Amino acid sequence: MNNPITAVPRAARLSSLARFLIAAAVALLLGLLLFEWTMQPPLQDLALMVALMGATTLFSVIAAYVAYRAGWINYSPRLRVTLLGGYVLAGILVFVNVWVTARMMFASAHDLALATVLLIFATSMAVAVGFFLTEAIITRIQDMQRAARQVAAGKLATRLPVNGRDEMAQLAESFNEMVGQLETADQKKRELDVLRRDLIAWVGHDLRTPLTSIRAIVEALADGLVEDEEQRLRYLRTAQADIRALSNLIDDLFEMAQMDAGGLRLEMASVSIADLVSDTLEQFSVQAQQAGVRLEGSADPGAEAVTIDVQRVGR
Image (cartoon, rainbow, N blue to C red; front, side, top):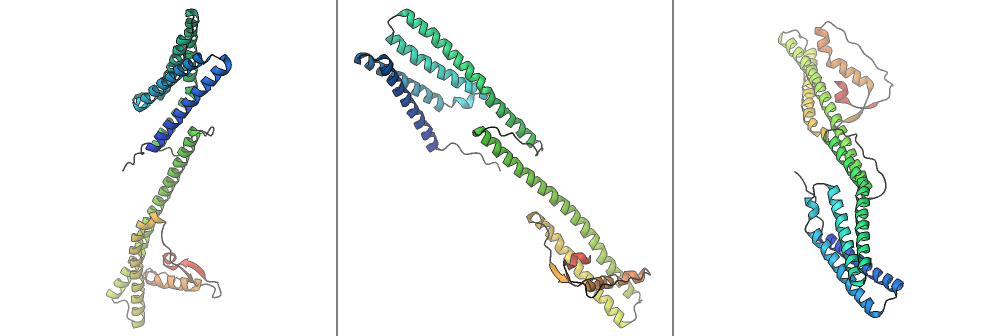
């Protein structure tokens, strides 16, 4: 099930708008202070400049807000076009602000024409420089796009270079962390698949061992080969042990479903090596007798006990 990323919260949008309004107010105040400091105009000219700059500031704020609310970024075919559109809009607003003010303040048509030419040149140059600088951002985004496609193709060793400390660098770090987690999960899955295949092979082998023993015991008893009562009881006890082993194997089959949660559960216990050897010889005594093979084994009675899973080692 896909979990789409939630939209930007309303509080965040309001915070962004508030920062924009504060920046516009600071720009207006700074422009008026520079005008007063450099020109030292009479009060009438200062009032006119306040009105002109206030009007152009309001126009700029409204134009930028309308463009933002219209969601024109969502309709742009490429990020490069989106950024270029932002630069062009900013350039147009700069041109309009300065040209309208100059039109109202300049008395000379020659000065106004010169200011117009210079504004067009400066605006065009600013857009060109901004477009050129966007190539660095576009290149990093394209690198992320290629890396994402490689990960989608199964190349989980893919990593992005982390350059700088900006949002793009943080995004690259998050991408690398995500791919690292995917790689770890894939490695664990592969290991579990290997364990599952090995377990199936082990279970197949372990099923043959007690079944062969039980079949040999049943055939020996059915054919009347065992006449001694004590030996017959020993055969039956061996068959009971093999049946318990089969029951344990069935339990192991259920444990396969738990492998994804951490592997097989081992029943560890401290046992004597001598007892383990003796029990193993007893388990295979019937098959050995039918095959005409003599089994022998011994262990140092003074050997230290070992901690093992007796059932699995006994197989």
